[in-house]
Image 1: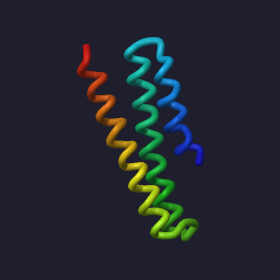
Image 2: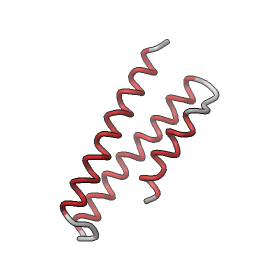
Image 3: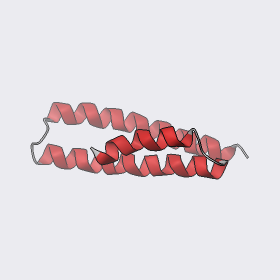
Image 4: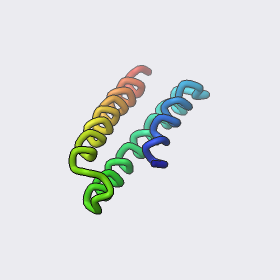
Length: 80
């Protein structure tokens, strides 16, 4: 729960970044939290805390967010 909600919190905080570097850093933290969330989802599935169907749905959503974060970081780094 913590890593999943941290993704949104860091994206929100990036809107108020003090600099471009700070903005990129917030998105990179959100990306790390996204990877951590993937880990926890897999663990929850493997220990039957969530069903396979719930896992697939949440993992797909997390993957979309991860791709958006990667694209946003790449774009921000490229806009000097």
